[in-house]
Image (spheres, rainbow over the protein chains, first blue to last red):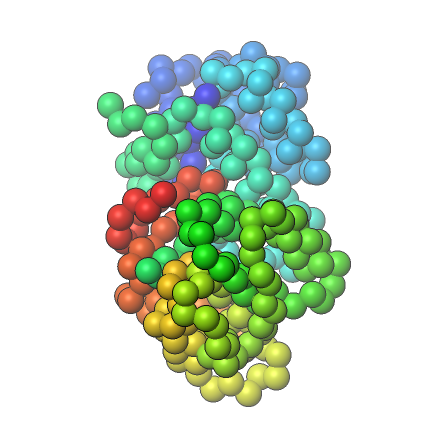
Length: 127
Length: 173
């Protein structure tokens, strides 16, 4: 598994497509994809949206996904570096994104953080 | 040695902090700064308690005024976390004029008195939202505290989804 993270609009998707030779048809968008399709897809974009859609089921879903699609490229925003949101559902989402992100990172042989389009390999070998 | 660990929400800061102190064989003290108010705080405290269980920490609850603590010099201390401590100092009675000075001074005192200090803090300034008054002050003060502690800390580590990134010092795990 490969994990790509970073803030919004840092060039995560462009990097993934370039680096791993992905076409648009290889990518499922977490905002509106079918959950069953995620077992076979090469790349999942906006994983934080999947966490939002699944709520508290997201943690077990993520653990299962790491087993069922171990070669996937997962793109997930970094969203936790701010003030604790006033809205409870936002707080729960933010915490679940953190938990799911830690699970994906632990199962990934490589984790890449993109800042201003520049990849920083924070886990795994730098080739 | 003093180590500052920063990062966002649920990014594995605490587990990493505990991991650093696994190699320490003396007395280990956990300074808990989160006040058990409300269901979510209670849940968070329980979660962290479970995580620490069996790892040999004694817990000291100290929500403000950490400079008052007097701890044995051969112990290791895990202070968690500056985000709560700063909020407690700023919002509990609202009379602390410079919480940054007070907190940094307290942390420095701990750093000079115990054998190993690990401090967990938070990154709170990157959500792109413009806040007013109290919250804006909080972000400014916590940012200032983090910078001042990072200056004298031997190591500064950022956790990103559980992955430690060395910002200052050596890889110590």
